[in-house]
Length: 344
Ligand SMILES: [Zn+2]
Ligand SMILES: [Zn+2]
Image 1 (spheres, protein in one colour):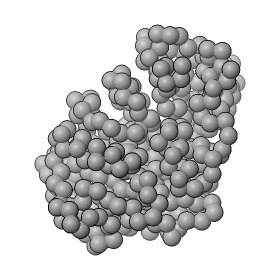
Image 2 (cartoon, protein in one colour):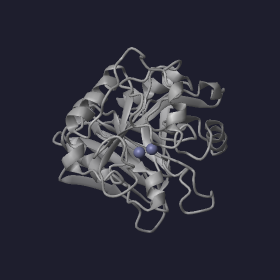
Image 3 (cartoon, protein in one colour):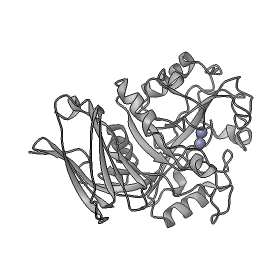
Image 4 (cartoon, protein in one colour):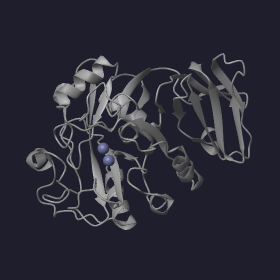
């Protein structure tokens, strides 16, 4: 019997799940973002400006779906320090709303954490509970988990962002609970020169038993010319497989984990059959398997020819499995981790 891990039916939609615009400190307007991403074959952009959630559903068309979101910060040292300076640690988390229309931002503060670009000017666009007291954040696991928990209870899709840029290590992120996914790759940080390839950090969370997915995203701010090394769009993306390009279908696919992260390769099929996991993909130099134990596996042709599928045995003692596809330029695509009890 065949069990599909990425759904058998539906369509893959190319998405950027982390994006900044002139609503906060990005250089391009939400409309310009739509135009350039559509030209590159994207169907979905999550607008995740810093700390204020402003919906852009007016940009919706038949082939383009904007998701409503924002990126929340927690800074060591408080709410007014410029996190781009010095060596302070911070925690950045993206929250994507399940609500297509008039999404409500929880835990809002009318004056704190509004230091990114045009934040202050655009704060009046936020839909928040005017009767609720200002929510005060602190850079502590308790405060971060309380904040995450409130959005989790409201059904948001929550991603933990760029631990490398944030100067966070296991000591910090092992305390955070309730995220749906983490950025296994953040292209914006990578384009600046950071080593923002976080597969080892992802495995750390999996070893703690966290049922967490992995995404790749641009985190684009678009302040550098398009022909420069620091241009930060189109390098990290997530393919979401959903029945149709509707807000409800795409959001449900994210919550179910029906997606994979990529810097280039495409994964076309992923399924279990006869005790093996099977993957089909665009031409690959190498396909590797991580199992959460001291066992791993790999497929590649030693004559340099490329492969487009692989099958790997799974064993009862494996903790989870996740597969990485490496293309000819050794750019990776990552499946999320599937725990053995989830697929039995
Ligand atoms: Zn960030
Ligand atoms: Zn960001």
